[in-house]
Amino acid sequence: MGTRRIAVTVDGVRYTDDVEPRLLLVHYLRERLGKTGTVVGCDTSNCGACTVHLDGLSVKSCSVLAVQANGSEVLTVEGLERDGQLHPVQQAFHDNHALQCGYCTPGMIMQSIDLLGDNPDPSEQEVREGIEGNLCRCTGYQNIVRAVQDAAQKMKPGASASQPAAQSVAGGGA
Ligand code: FES
Ligand code: FES
Image 1 (cartoon, rainbow, N blue to C red):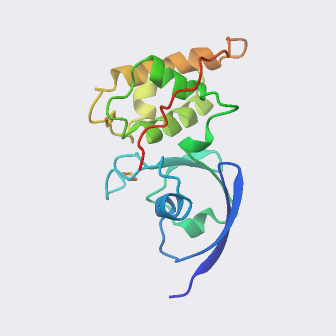
Image 2: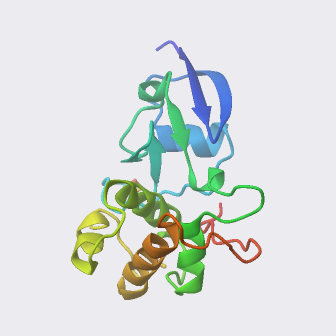
């Protein structure tokens, strides 16, 4: 089967590549672009560990083909930092101890940012519903919910945007 040419912007950088039509977006990100902060946690489209933003909306990148991202903008957890500062949601996950093994964290953060884009001040129940497609085997979710609500407060217009020095809660790893 022949390859197809795609042009896609990932974390602000434009790439043009020839890919197999069946190549999953998550494998394109990890194996072709080296974006190993986005991880694979299942083979059933269940866990959400692979969540990225595609044109601003969260998607499970194991359920999207790379060719479907042609012409689009993809944002991964690796593209969240600005000027060495963690994104407020990353910072809140750190501050609220919302990760243990960290495997779910990249996807959880990307999903949470999408959730807060839709609902800037979610209730506990709304956070739980918003992240129900993302599984965490470690934390029991309580601190994750707390982190998302903390981030919501910090992201409110007029809230102090000051953040301590960046620390790596990008999570996951290779
Ligand atoms: Fe994509 Fe689990 S790896 S949902
Ligand atoms: Fe381990 Fe969530 S912190 S799976």
